[in-house]
Image (cartoon, rainbow, N blue to C red; front, side, top):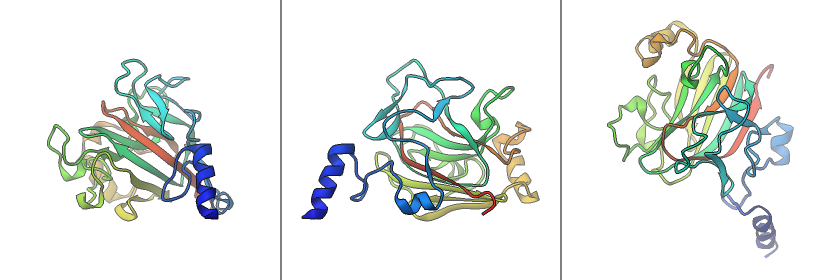
Length: 238
């Protein structure tokens, strides 16, 4: 009964649970391990539109999640984190609406002369695998390293359901996770990586994934996406 009361009080204060725990919070253990929140669950603080000082009005907070409101015609476009990160572990929960497409792009260079986030950053794909209007190749499905390495389709929950995700980069070693499973594993910047890039849409982007440090971006690809429980921990010197 005491446990139920504690959860009830937390719900009244925050309004959101994940498996009996409040979302967008850090435990004492996580704090000691160096984890930080990239989203407070209440505001868009910590994020701004790509190459702009503020954030577009289409990006809102709904039910404890950072949400792209596709009914809003103004203030659209990708958003990026205020801070840059290198050698990191980034975890998050994500959900796309039916027929929607988005992505988490990392190592993004938020400056001229780049006209899009994906010109410099690799993408953790977020998409409706089953109902997207266009046909998808395996490398274009959710939790894949977009157009480079495919994630098994069966690892991902359907559109409209929450998935857990993770991106870990340390000394060029990249691992991406979905729902507790390893989705992608590769080494950046070696000969095999160069072969992957040369066979992809990014071959013409001379600065694609060249910098070891950059921002996270959430992509506006025209469809509704929601993000919550975004946490990051630096792995530099660890």
